[in-house]
Image 1 (cartoon, helix red, strand yellow):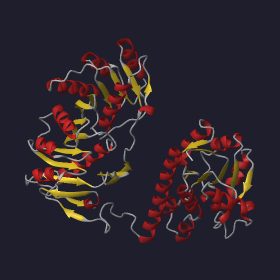
Image 2: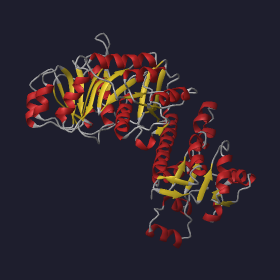
Image 3: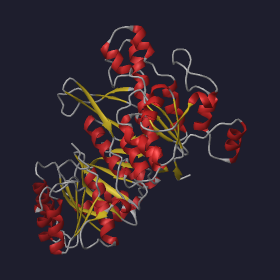
Image 4: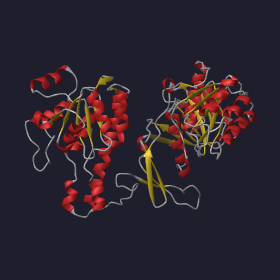
Length: 508
């Protein structure tokens, strides 16, 4: 089911802070609440009526609280698919359905950090909580899982603004968070038992190691840990270098945005796109992408979302490039392109994007979720008196996809499915805007009617003023500046349309 109304909830948390507003929403919406121990007492202190879990299972909390929720009458209500068969079994065995599970885990990591007493540490290994999280996350089609207080804002929004009705997308997002919590928790337990709290992040017996020719520069050694063969067939050319791999990664991430679109070609240099176009045929896409910046294209990384035919291969073969990536090549195209021994030809077997990104710095490693968000038509909020027309909306979405994959600060200018120019990696957004406009003019583009995208908000109206004077008529940006209204007012005064997405796409 796409949308589900929350009618029942199981709540069992170690920390109660931040839960009060959620409980009040559940009470106001007459949600049946099941709970245990201290959580039950807390909910009742807020005026909530609670059905003790023991009343469902017929068993009290036993073994000093080690066993409370581990029972078929609890997990049956969570794991049951809401179909006739499963619901019939629940009715037969008098098992209530549970639509929402709010759980956090015993503070194992904090306990390890605060004591060396093994008994105290072991007692903080959560069993029931982790099982509830995994069970509810597995059944995300029918159940909402809140695995930590980090997700409280989202469940509060579902309860207050959605009146307790969750969407499939929301439930799936929370399920992903749940397995992240579960994975992190189990990793910390493993590290404790393995005695390796400072395990290397990348070196692992599960990853293949490959020595590269050199790193970013010839005096730097480099290795790759991973399995390229899972996603690529390298059909010919020299070995992929460190810089090749970095550029290929950027190219694959960019083209992932266009995986379901018409033929799209992108040309990248030093991880930044200098030419991108979407057209009815792959040959047209190549020619139009190249036109954006034929100078930077020399020695670049080329990537396409569809098969390369012989006519396109003949045109590509006129340019020196480092790597060409595509899902397939016709036999004639392969033969022609493989004749150049130093040019690397890569067949992409799958469009696979890592969910986590890592970077070494200072005395350690940082990681964060990969930016997988991209805003479609439904996420665009028109903030000006003039709304963009359908063509402008298409241009804005196209430009926004590119802005996401360019180094910040960045400005993208686009029209009719073509990157006209970009300014990226600048210390000022005004510099990025002026760079993009100057570059477009250098390659002969008329910017009249073009769209402009920014990776972050405009703190002042200077960028939209510069863009307007260059002929640009529609703008997309995240918004969020305390001076957003200044940019909006300028657009209204000069007949520009502007949409805001609410999502920033910094790329450092």
